[in-house]
Amino acid sequence: GAGVSQTPSNKVTEKGKYVELRCDPISGHTALYWYRQSLGQGPEFLIYFQGTGAADDSGLPNDRFFAVRPEGSVSTLKIQRTERGDSAVYLCASSFSGGYNEQFFGPGTRLTVL
Amino acid sequence: KNEVEQSPQNLTAQEGEFITINCSYSVGISALHWLQQHPGGGIVSLFMLSSGKKKHGRLIATINIQEKHSSLHITASHPRDSAVYICAVGTSGSRLTFGEGTQLTVNP
Image (cartoon, rainbow over all chains, first blue to last red; front, side, top):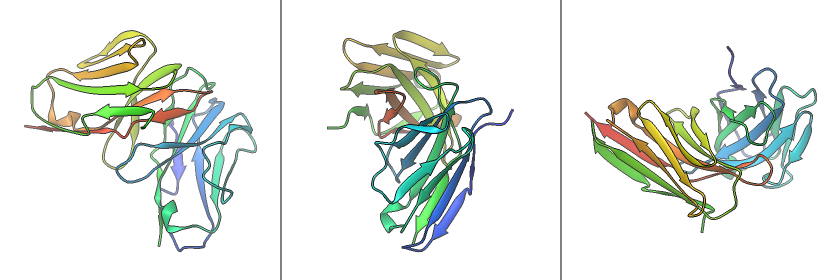
């Protein structure tokens, strides 16, 4: 069966550009999470969706970061005016209904801002 | 101080050795997760537990809620066990808070 998929797998962009990262969760999973992992660090929480709505966006570092999930399935993480410090692996995970449920992770998108 | 701390940060073992990785946390949790991350980034969930002990093959995870401590044990370690092991706790709502990971290398 299909797991969580993320595209692109790698993205190289220039400082100041806009990027979109896509996550396709496991079919039927209502909860979707975005995390960011810098080199040598554990992942950090960014945002959690339950269905179409962002249930917790307290991990978004600033207003350059925004995420949507308009139909309750695919989610897009959008980063405006990228900075070199945004370089990281962006991980997406989904779970059946959030809360006390196992999260299944995608392979991540490695973002490099030059 | 991080909410989730792991030790050791790096661990090198010989094939066949018994391995223990420790995780301490400072917040109230709904569940604790042990995750495995191989080079290239893919993360796999190994265990999710809120009390007691779980076993899967050569892997054992324990948690002591009163002491806010968990351990991951690997028996009869093998080079294919080489990976980063990450402890994560479920806190408010559904978000996970992660430790920095333990890089395990098992030499043949």
